[in-house]
Length: 323
Image 1: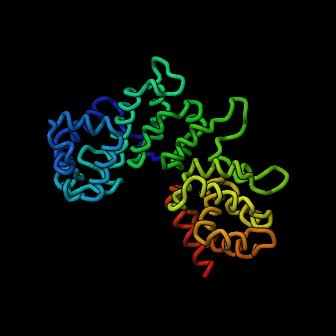
Image 2: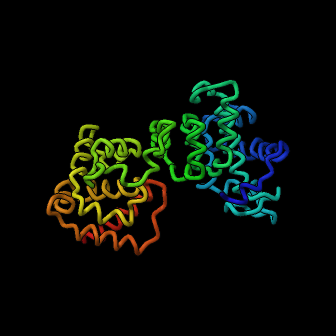
Image 3: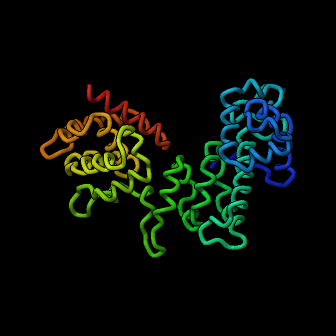
C-alpha cells in the first residue's frame, strides 16, 4: 500500500477541505472545458462530476492533459503548480492523497445511489462495500471502474485485497465478479490463478473452453478488430492446438500468472497469424522460437499489469524475435 495514502486524515474536516477546493475554482475550470457542465451552477456541476464516474474520469484527464489551466489553483507549498502525485500541496497533503479522497468520495456516492445492484443487498450494503474497498481505492484510473467494483461480492474483495490493482480494465473486473468460486473451493477466481488453470490436467494441453473464458474476461477480441465473435472463437481454437513442448517452455517465466501466459499466446497468434502460430506451437513446431522469446523476456523487467501495456511489451518481444 502507498503509505502516504494510508496516512491521510479521513476526518470530515479533511474531506471537506478537498471538497471545497474542488467545488470552487477547480469546478469552474472544468465548466470551461466540458460543455455539459457550463449551464449548471457550481454546486450542480460539482454534483454532476462527483455522481458520475465517467465525467470525473474526464476531469482527471483534463487535469493531466492541460495542467496549465490549474496554475494558481492546484499549487504546492511554494505556490507553484502541482502536477506530480508526490508533491505536497498547501494543505500539507500530497496530490496523491487528494486524488484518493476524491475517488473514494465518488465511489461512496455511487454505491449509495445504486445500492440495489450490490450482490446480496442489505440495508447497509453500500457502506459495507465502501468500507471493504476503501483501502484499495487510491488512483484516478480506478474512477471508471467504480461501476464495476459495485458488482464485486464482499468476500471476493477481501480475498483479492491489493491484487485488485492488477485489474485495470472493466472487462477484467467484471470477469472477477462473474467467476466467483464456491465457498468451499480453494481455487482463486480464474484471472487470479496460474497457467495450470488453462491446461487439461494430466495432458499439458490447453482446455479451449477455459481459454475462451479468459479471452472473454480479458476482452482479447481487441487484438482481432476485424473479426466477429465467431472469428475470435476460431482464433481461440487455433491457439488451443499449442503442443506441450512449446507450452512447457513458457511455464517457468509466465506460468505463475494465467493472464500473462494467455496474453502472450494471443499476441503471438494475432501478430504473426494462424499459420505462423501453428508452425511454432503446433505438432513438430519450432519450440526453439518460444525458448528464444522467453530468453528475450528475461532481459527486461516484467511488463506492467495494465493489459494494454502488457500487450505492447509482448508485441515488442515477439516482433524483435521474429526478425
